[in-house]
Image 1 (cartoon, chains in turn purple, green):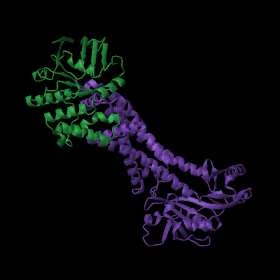
Image 2 (spheres, rainbow over the protein chains, first blue to last red):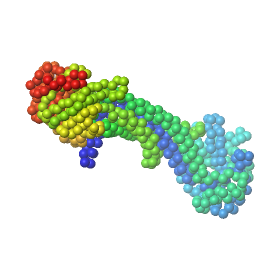
Image 3 (tube, rainbow over the protein chains, first blue to last red):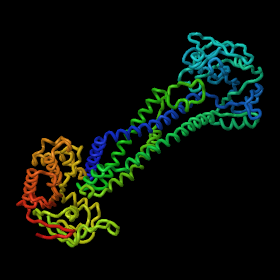
Image 4 (cartoon, each protein chain N blue to C red):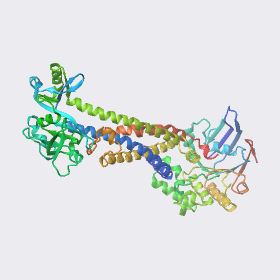
Length: 397
Length: 225
């Protein structure tokens, strides 16, 4: 009984395949349009996953808590004197002062991120060199040294030169020598980054010697991050306390929001395709009507004809799903998601050309499957049922 | 296999403005292994009668039975199962699927029965050899002649080995030679014990020696001759 049932389904599948082949032009055109829609949706999903994973990797070494000072709702420099107040809070392992800001380079229209810190006082200072593709991190005693992101030398047109200058606010030039370049794996955060000593950053931005832009706070027990953040906020009410999980979440939300916005636009395309599929599936041609009539006269049941239609829909959508996902993978991995990169990566002049390698889980594929194949099968099932109920006498009229 | 119709009436579009009474209290019995010709003008109701015998749809009223099994109240699914078991159809227009191969057309009725591909092929080839068109087995149906198409349609009607063969105006599109050939095949099937019902007004059919009985149908009623 089971064997006969299986043979029957295999026979029907065989017929569905031959039916698709007989209408290969129509089948191929539907499959290609469907694959294009899946390609767009899957690309968005893969880019989001890649960027979230890249952000996660890059933020793994970020400070657990960042403390900034707020005045009139805007960020201000924070007095170095706060360092002692912070260090006194139980559970805090280390407090590292930092200067962090943007520098607009009018000559090439690019915005660089400049960060001043003392690597020697950072808890993971000795491992910072591991984030470099070449060179080394400077020491605090060195003057005019910088570690830069991958894009900086090319953006400034340095060629083989290792020195560059940036304008101070009074338009005098501040020279730097490059001691290291960040690794490509950290590009999401370091692509446009210039890291220098606290003193050089203070000099570049003309920040008073008793001030920095923020403090990086490292805690003894990572499980206590939220508690310590709350303590800091209580003790220094004029500060804004940002935790690493919050920043990670912000990245996820930003990428998720952009992906969601794009997905909504693409779902409109999917809906249009679904309407097209419905229209195509419900408009039976005289030949199709006659074919179903013949099959039914020859002893095919309504369920058999429905199964043929179901297999046809499943084969088309599965093939489109495979082709769409494969093209999306190629688009994301080998072409760096060229279609969506500006939308997803941000508003920066220097877009990070980071290598996107989505580590997709089964859940991602199921999500794409649920948003594409399932609606296709759903919108074709009623027309398929209507087709299957064509009376057998339509073949002999 | 005995075919019995008692007081069978068929009304299309019942209760609507375009209601048509195609059959009006028709009673008929066809003995197993006989060949009967239903003769009548276009619109006389002979195709409707053939469709009821062929379990394509039930009568509006009256009783229809094949081999003692009543068909009148059967739902569509059971009519299909009866049709699959007992009936082989040959159509006026042949009704083959033009892009399918000859062999695939012949074996179409075996697909929903779950017959494995190898057995399907063997059964189909055996019939094509019997009907002398096995050399065309791989040709698409739209690449062969009318006479060959007719034999494909016969092979398809026989592939399930049904006890009853129904043919609707089978010679309407055939020349004299092919019509005679068709009737010769039908006579052979009758000799093999099949019950054959043919609708036709072609003298080559109605006057053939193998036809035991002609049933004249006019305006949905039977006139036995």
